[in-house]
Structures are given as structure tokens and as C-alpha cells.
Amino acid sequence: MLAILPHRRGRPQTVWKTGRVLTTRATLDKHHADVASMFDGVAKRYDLMNQIMTMGAVDTWRDLVVDAVEPEPGQVILDLAAGTGTSSATFAARGAQVYPTDISTGMLVVGKQRQPHLHFVAGDATCLPYADNSFDAVTISYGLRNVEDPQKALREMLRVTKPGGRVVICEFSYPTWAPFRHVYTKYLLAAIPAMAKLASSNRDAYDYLAESILAWPDQPHLADMMAEAGWQAIAWRNVCGGVVALHRGWKGSDEKEMA
Image (cartoon, rainbow, N blue to C red; front, top):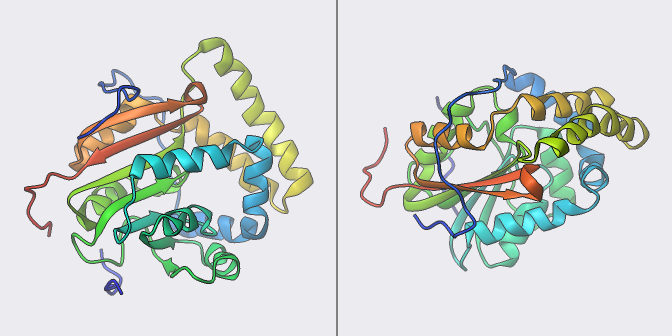
């Protein structure tokens, strides 16, 4: 069993892109307690809403994340913002030892009910309860955007990753085709809240979802954030025209333990 500490403060494929950003769009300022409480309130119907909002595409996106992580039997993987553990279960099915970790206790309770074979851990991405160099890979899907200090979270992910290990970030992103961006924005601001009104008990949470997606930095800027945190060989892959982007980075194999 992986040691859990007390609470404390390149190989890209041809379809992956690299680059630098010239401008940024926006930043988020969310308190972790507020975010945790919000997700507690939507935990029971979270997976259902994901299916509805993405018209089932979330399953394909999850498979792409697993393929990007390239888990092998016996490897130790940290699944951050794991929610109810649907992605963690996929890693476990590949033979990996996975630690689904989330700040929302409501999500963890539902996850434990649905995935009783997984070892769920309560943890904040900005101060992870794990020792240095613990994981072969770290992944976070649709969660970094909700972190109070994303840059600090990226550094924490690096700290707990073994030298030579990798990170995969899946996040809603910036559509690359301008005409579609206009349609997509309308979908986020109108359709998603309407769906939430019918299928969720907390419409405000999905109003936040739409607004936070539009405020999130684009693909090159997130790559810059990862580089600033110390990740190497960073690349990204657009999915569904940039509606979602997968970013991948590596921890240097000769990097010493981080304090």
C-alpha cells in the first residue's frame, strides 16, 4: 500500500502539438472549500450529467486519456479529481494500482458505493497527501480548471511523480475553428444550464461549469504553465476540434527529489 502522508503544504505522437502562447484569455479565482461543496451537491448525478452534456463522448475521451497515460500492470497511478472513480476503474482494469483522489467528500462517498474495490483518498491537488516520487503517472480530467491555484497543483503533481514519469491533463479547451467557437459558446451558456435544470439538483454548479470553461486558458498557455511548473517534453492533442485537449508532460529522469 502506498504511504499517505499527513496533510502538508518525451515522447509525443505526431498528432500532438507543441508551441508557445502569445496572449492569455482569463484566470480563475475559486476557493477550494466552495468548489468541494459544489461538487458534493452534484455527486449523485454527476456521471449522468456528463453523459448528457457530452452526448456520450465522455466515454471516448476517457479512453483517450488512458491511452495517453499508457498504464502498465503494476504501475502506480494517481487519478486526481477522480470524482466517482469511473476513470480510475479503467486504469485498474489495465492492471495498474490506482489512487482516486478528490477534494469532494460527496464524490468520494458515491465513488466508494459504485467502485468498492478502489482505494479512494480525500486530498487537495495543491497539497497532496503523498510522498515525493510516488507515482509512475498522474492524471487529472476536467479538474485542474477548478483548482484554486492551478500552478501550485502542477508543481505538486510533479513532486509526487517518479523521475521519468508522466502527467496527462484532460480539460475542456479552446475550439480551433472560429465559426464553431461561436456555436460552442452558445451551447455552453444556454444548453448546458437548461439540461442541468432538468437532470441535476444544482443548476448553479453547471452555470459555473460553462463560465469556467470559457475562462480557462487555451492550449498553448496551459503548456506554458506546465513548463513553468517543471514538466518537460510537453505536447498536446486536440479532441473534437479543441472542445477537449489532452496535455502530456514528463518528469526528468535525472531529477532529484523535490523538497
